[in-house]
Amino acid sequence: MSKSIQVDIVSAESEIFSGEATRVFATGILGELEVAAGHAPLLTGLLPGPIRLRLKDGAEEIAYVTGGILEIQPGHVTVLADTVVRARDFNEMEAIKAREQAEQAIQDSQSRVDIARARAELVQAAGMLRAIQDLKKKGKYK
Image 1: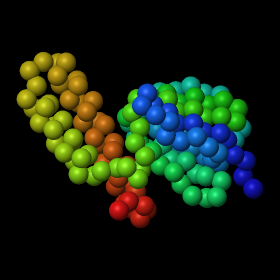
Image 2: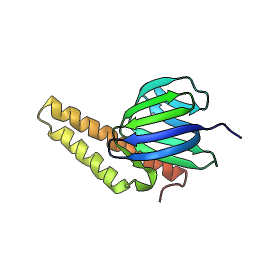
Image 3: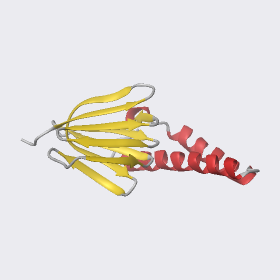
Image 4: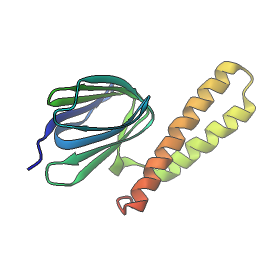
């Protein structure tokens, strides 16, 4: 039986997940991460994208974060997300609309601040759509 690690995924709004997992997959600022029991301690920023958990029974739990911090300690992984959404709460139409609004805002922007904000919103919407597409490929999104 695979060793497990305690995983907590939280944001300012709520705790999304707290439980045991055998693997955690995330996108850190320097690339893709796979965390298992016994992983070396690490603290890294997270890019917008999915956080996948492989649970002890083999099932997967998926959430989408807009960014945040990943902390790995012996036997414990903590995700401190800016904003987080569970996979079962994904809304493809809202993500498409957000992407379109961000693209329009970039075209209409009058200042560098507006452009930077719109680009950040575009990255978040594109990341959400990528996560939805990945789930569709795996047959886990309806």
